[in-house]
Amino acid sequence: MRYYLESPIIQCTLLMFTVFIIDLVIPLGVAVGVLYVCCIALLIREKVKVTLRFSVLATLLTAIIPVITFDDRTTWMAFVNRGISLLAVWMIYFIVVKHRILDHKMRVYTTKLEIKNKELEQFNYVASHDLQEPLNTINSFSLLLNKQYKGAIDEKADKYLDFITQASNRMSALVKALLDYGRIGHNLNLEKVDCNLVLEDVRSDIDALITKTNTQLLINDLPKIKGYETELRLLFQNLISNAIKFQGENTTPVIKIGATLETNQWIFFVKDNGIGIEQKYKERIFAIFQRLHPACEFEGTGIGLAHCRKIVDLHGGNIWLDSHLNQGTTFYFNIPA
Image 1 (cartoon, helix red, strand yellow):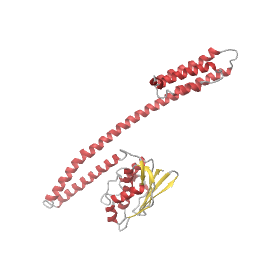
Image 2: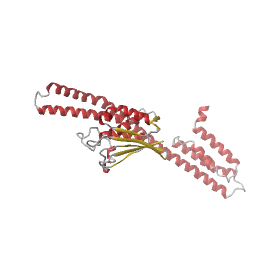
Image 3: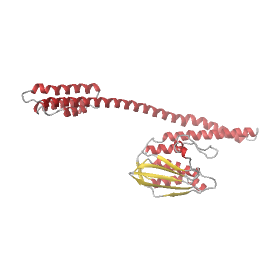
Image 4: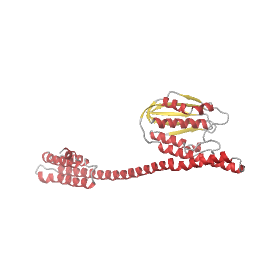
């Protein structure tokens, strides 16, 4: 019994006939369309045919009242109100139909998106297994050839072997970077994150690089925010690593990190004294595999800042920069407070 009463169709039927009984009692001058509209609104998730049938029923129930209760006291206002009621009923019908069409399109889009996500997951699986395995084999055998036959043939052969080793290492790094990019956003756990502790972890992770380059990290007191800890750690690590990497000759990296609260959002900054970025490349650098410098000048895969943008997007924010050539760069990103 309870199941039937929870059905929107049963609820709508009971309510409509209740409205009809009330309409028999109250004066004709009162428009009952709003009550029938409320009844039909219950069917917003039902099939369009069901909504059409109840709209027709509401029309009949509304129109029959003047016929049943007509007498000398009936005025023209009663028929105007009947017309308003009918107009309201059919307006809600078309609104419900429009909602159903949009809902169907959304379901189709969601299904396609789920299929694409599954394809990406399959790609990640292939990349992590089927691509890494032959790369590891190439790398292993090129190392063996270098070890056993280096200098046994001629200088050209040695150079070719070096090229093979370097190319396989770069390819392996690119595949790993792609996998890391694909994993961002999986198994998310939104929690209260202390950014000061995140920076301590990052400092520990890249301590060898910081020591080697004599980098000065100047970190202000940072806030606690709702976010994804693993992704935030990767975000700060990428920005700091880039700041250390892109330095001019004979310069010591100085990196300042802080945050300010502005209109319900935290705006973080990571400022360095590096080589800077030309204005025309401000958007390009956030695209995947976009490099502004050849690999021989600065190592890397060209995907670090793409990681950063994806992570900030996950937190509902934006990332941008302020930079001038040979005058350092400041990266900004905002996260809701």
